[in-house]
Image 1: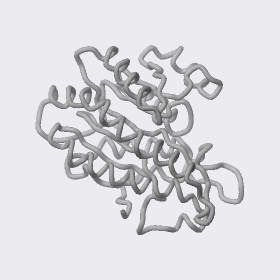
Image 2 (image 1 turned 120 degrees about the horizontal axis):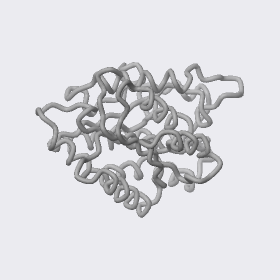
Image 3 (image 1 turned 120 degrees about the vertical axis):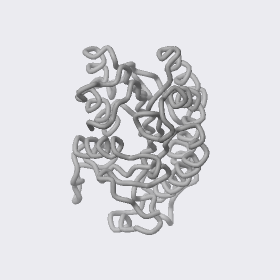
Length: 260
């Protein structure tokens, strides 16, 4: 983490799981970000209680109401973040929010597919569009021509379930809508890396591993091997070391390449 220096970061889905883990670990940095924007669907709800408690102790945490399936909410969040940042831009956008609904190939529904793509793919496209001006502002004000997460970057939280080459996930049950939406997200990440490179913005898709969260599961016959802290600390180490040659890549929490 020593190589990651960001003045401002926005994390979506920051009220629990991996998103909350990012917020907690940014606070532990030797030089924490001046601004940690924590986006969540219901900032005043019970599920955001731990995030609320953190924000009450750390004035650099700004909780932002944000529903990634709602274009109006995304635009409002970008405006609010822009107001806080003033003349400075945003260093790091971590698109972590997403949904997972189990569904077998034989009975997957239109509703599930639309919800998965809206939250896991389309919402991240709109997040990139809405926050592009703030990311560009930071990139243009940074010295040098290379790309890095300390300069300006979009990090899309993907999953190995979106890999069309490595389909081992089917051994644990089918999650068709989730798999398809993450595969589409991987393509979006690649498109963003090519389209935003000229603006000095690095874009990457990350697989956080199989993590002990509400989404990853903690009960049943299969227990996820990773804690939130293990996953997040690994990903922050990866983000501190990647550069222009990794933009557009699909990496896991240890920095290993995940097959498309």
